[in-house]
Image (cartoon, rainbow, N blue to C red; front, side, top):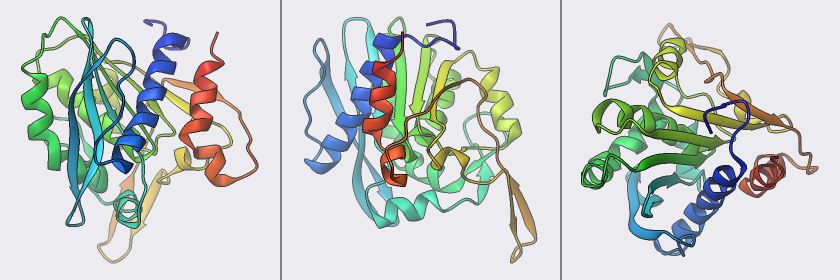
Length: 241
């Protein structure tokens, strides 16, 4: 797993499955069946535009902790994804990040870290997410690397939009997190937000960049939604050598 250009297939499939389970949990009141060998620790609820919604979960095994987040499912989710104003990343010096993603993350951060800090720091700590959840996983994993005392942190995300500016990317790259960003070349979402956005009403420019380590593949389903779906990314993870 240390070779970031060749992500571990078993890990990628497990984390892709967790992303699918995060969607299941959101549709079933936070209930889902943990993968074999893991136990449910907690399902995570967050606030978005005044609504309280299920966003993910924490599961645990003898050697691993996994934190997983779903992507957009509703109009408020898409509205948060479209909130591309930038604000300072508040948990370490790391530039500017997507306001919509950060707002959701902050709404359940206290619960998440209360649980993580009570787990063994010797366990490998994985963050994963799809789409909107990929952005949240990126923010959460950097926070964990700076503020939990766990140095065994990994992050695999799927179909991620850009999350922050170049300073954020630089800080993340220097954090020691071992990560891989799965990108379907046929998926439009990883192209967003644009690298430069001008807010004429405020007279501001926002600049976005991607984390560089990526696992690039091409799966064409014939639809925009299909090319971005977590099911498509799961198939890509299964095809890793």
